[in-house]
Image 1 (tube, helix red, strand yellow):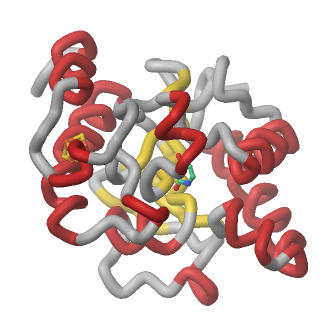
Image 2: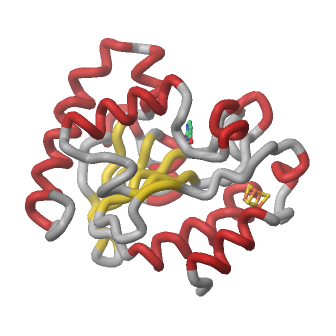
Length: 189
Ligand code: URA
Ligand code: SF4
């Protein structure tokens, strides 16, 4: 396992998959390195690739609003990262081979942070981190436990932007997340 300095250096110079050839910036992750709650998306989009920070576009603004609703803040008490750290061209889903090449960095981040709770943002992250046959429409908001970590998935903010009728179910999921944080976290609130 690498320490933070070593890990960030390795990511920023990584050439382990073809996404390295088209990226502008590696999107390492953002937030509190002592966070008890981690949020994991699938991979950087255009804005993230240009700025080097996860969730900074329109979906990112919605994510920040969702976090604020339950007193979370990317600058204070959560950590945000992605399954792949470089942007897939035209925002296509990251290939399994690309996920395989990159996931070790995320696993190293999880090992350093040792979160109590991991929240997957959307289907791709949930299939990779919770179970391969995860059905996001049916199983969002449900809780799973893996190696002592409480895991759940909520709809990807970009999916909510595409279909605002799905906001209420996400609001319910966020309230359940808030309750879980109160139950298992000691310094998030
Ligand atoms: N969508 C993601 O899954 N991750 C980001 O960082 C931005 C948009
Ligand atoms: Fe390396 Fe991950 Fe970027 Fe591929 S996506 S080049 S594995 S950092």
